[in-house]
Length: 108
Image (cartoon, rainbow, N blue to C red; front, side, top):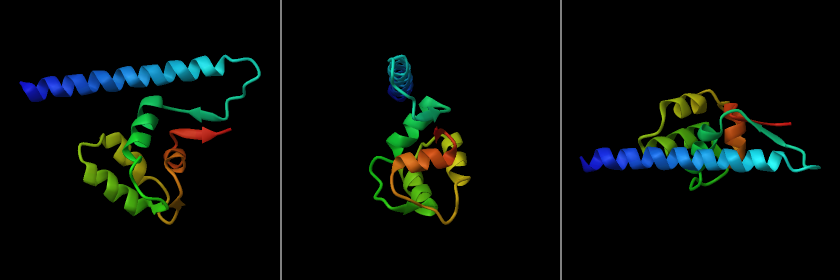
């Protein structure tokens, strides 16, 4: 029962944070004179991936990133699939580069 409640709380918290992030970004996009530099395809997944990668040491290649994320455990299958599709030989210098390589965000 406790595990079930913990999972529900975790999911609700994740949803609330994702909604808050998206609302903040939408508000920022409406500021006159500001140009949007990054187009994010899926805020919740981009945010989750950034959060997963916050403690990894860079530079990191695809294998290091996959092993790191697998070691955390309980990672969304869609995120794992996106990471699997990134370039084999690329060295990533930060989590933003990884998120861009997955297609979740693109610089304009």
